[in-house]
Image (cartoon, rainbow, N blue to C red; front, side, top):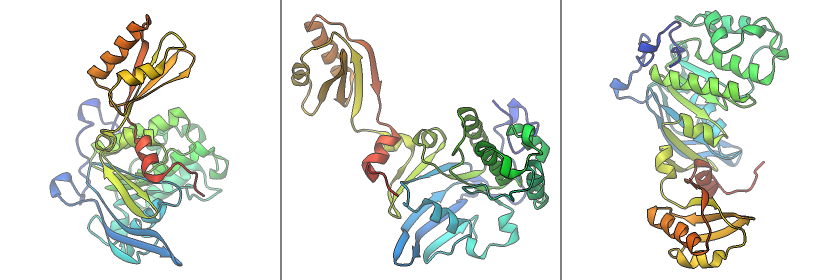
Length: 334
């Protein structure tokens, strides 16, 4: 297990212990780190957010998902005090973010899209500047090393790669030991190694008792990180729950290889009503429906009747991406 990001030098035996930030919110308090009720935010005559509810508990990760224009970034802007709600109630660590004090801001970390650093500032200088505003910051040099920024520590921000800028923005968001962190598309533009690093860091933040709200277009990321998922479309919540709950039920997909050209119509007849079978490529077959031992036995038995062996059998469960597309549509939005 990797060291905790909130306590430099923490060993494997104590990484699961909470940070104990003075004045922090713990899971034992019972109070949510973030509570949003009936949030409405309009721009002109358009409701970017239209009656949205969500709650983020301490020591948990909530993924806010939705297509472009669904209201995700607007929601984050209101929760972080960058925009004012037109209606509804928002409480960040028990406080209205629109009237946020310096004390509240010190307890919240924000990683916006685009980084937001000065173009000419050097990477480590920027992190040290942010750390200087915190009462009990992490060691910036340690954080530079943890996030793999040592090689560009003296590079001006405008000359950093997109992935380096993302990692610096994340460092700035957590250097003050926040109790609640907002991560807006935290792995956008990152290579697989950088993405995996961010995932490990988010998991470690949760272990330290930090509440995390992240927006992402990567369904795999949401499934890997989130305790709770909220899917929004046109400013409203259309589904929410744990990744497991959201992906439960529905059709599955069984794929197998066998002799090309078999009569899939006969296979569909042998299966229970509602199942679909097709040969997608030569010798590659797919069956859609709820896959259970009886269905698997029917498929392998049918192949045997055709004098064929079902090989490379794979069952794919319903994914979060499948759920997302079912709820929000498959068209590309501007």
